[in-house]
Figure 1: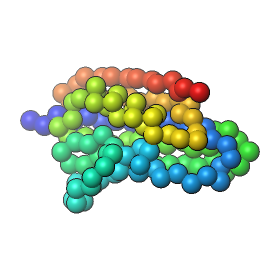
Figure 2: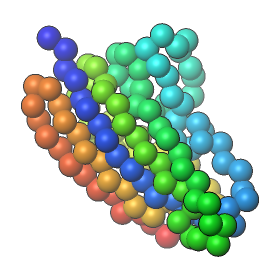
Figure 3: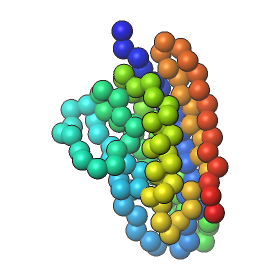
Length: 124
């Protein structure tokens, strides 16, 4: 029987000015679907059938400090490693340059049922 880890999360990234260009795959990790070719480099957390999905929302107000909100969601098959998830999130914090990881929250639900909930405060 497969282990499925269901993930929902969001992080806030503060930046000013908003005109700066970011390479989100390098910062947050590359996304890979089940039938995609393997990708080298920094990856989003990945199960045997692909990675989490990321959705990046840029604040439309150029004078607002809360520049980006990034949502993560997905169902990771054969993934039961919360320590490796923490390593990934720590690396995301290190990858952010000229911006600040302000805060984030993730919820994990694993089948068979184990329920985890975590938050990470940013650093200024």
